[in-house]
Every structure is written in structure tokens, then in C-alpha cells.
Length: 196
Image (tube, rainbow, N blue to C red; front, top):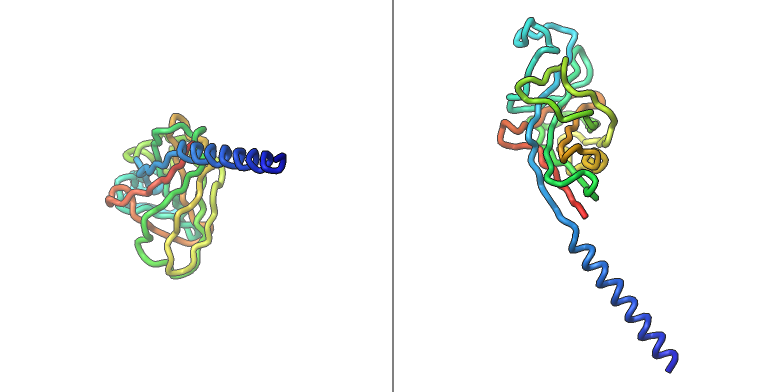
């Protein structure tokens, strides 16, 4: 009789915990947010004829259909992408970003680096190499083989530090060059967010 009671008690406890797990799992929510803004931030020591005063730091590239990241040679450029979530960063349990396919296939392997920007107070029409927000910290670095695209990449740390749901990230190359479609091409980067 005592053994039967123990077995019933253990079965009841197991049922209770599995019920709690189902309820807790049911409380998580999934969201997808397209980028609200993006721009290439160009810095170069050479002349840029299409920029004001031929100064590359003064270029506004937020209305272009592609975003460029380049490290090496005479130019350094990064892609800056902004998001607005409808949930507070403190409620985010996981967060990944998916960028569109590269415009041209990678001819060699590359390391894509994603960094959190210090703020999201910038606009596509005005952001330049002179006034773009600083990059605060690296949140991901992914090795991408030649002839591949960047897959879904975890940036939970950046999402959790969003201010009023708003944050921005930089995409850069450890060394080399890549180019991908921007929001203005109709293919924005997408943020996949899970909250509790």
C-alpha cells in the first residue's frame, strides 16, 4: 500500500511539472520585425566624386538599394540597420537576424561581424560617416564559406539592450567585401524575436 501511494505521488508530481511546462511554453511569443531603416556608412581616405565636397565621410547612402561592407584597401564601409520592436528588450529570450542574399556570390570565405550601435537616433536621409552612431560591442562573428549566404544569426544580446524597443546593428567584414539587398530594394533584413 505504501509503495502504491509513493508511485501515485511521483506520478502526480510528474504530471504537475509537465502541466507547468506546457503552460510556460504557451506564454512565449514569436515576432518577426522587418528593418525600419538601413544605410551604408562609408569612410575612405580617397576622393568620392558623388559625395558633397568629394568627401566620402559626407555621403548619405540610406536610399540605395544595396548595403555594402568592405574592409581593406582605401575604403572602410559598414551596413547600419535599425529595428523597432513592439516588445521591451528585457522580455526578449532569443533574437536572430536574417539578411537578404548577397548581391553577388562570395568568391572567397569571409567573416561577417555584427556589432551593436550606441543608438538608433539616425535617419536614412542624414546619416553619414561623420555622424553615424559608434559601434559599442561585437555581438556575433560568423564565418561564411565561398558561394554561400549568411544564415539566421543570433543577436540576442543586442535585442535585449534595445531602448523602448529600438536598436541598431552594424554589419562589417573582418577582411574583404560583401554586398546585400537593402530595405529600399523591397528585401529588408528581418528580426526573429521570442519573448516570455
